[in-house]
Image (tube, rainbow, N blue to C red; front, side, top):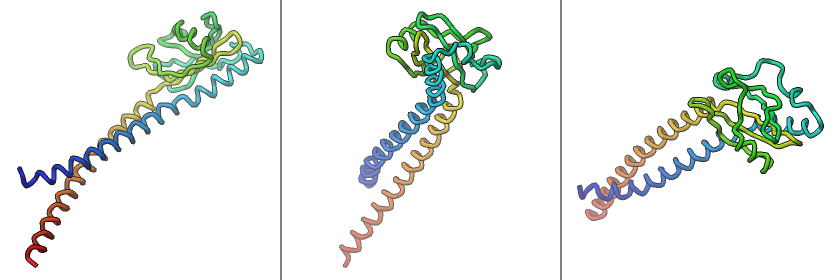
Length: 191
């Protein structure tokens, strides 16, 4: 074991750096995926809030097509509540019922002006939601996180593969480096 101690000692330090870098890469890319999942909702919510501030009827802002069934669709949607918590218009459903935003969320957005969060109204239905307050209303927009979460899972697999390959490659490099150092030491002693 003693002859491998210098190899493992050097390899451990390099492995710690590789692990840290892989962790940073994963966290930065994962957060980028998740934060960009809100981009369409911000645009929709801001447009709806501006229209409401300019006197638009909430029902006129909802797509005339059938409401989005959020448990099955990837489509973005818009739901408008009054600041008192009553639904004014809805372009989304969950299990065939109008999408009900929790009162605490409505109150929070009313007080703070806007919010963006992940919401899971039932198991397996995760949504990227944005709410923006307008005059007497709050425009909530959302869309499924399913594809984003699939990308994040793939990212995790890719980073894990890169981490394993880097750790193994570093072990080989450190082993070869140690073998070369011993060879040079022997050559210096014999010359």
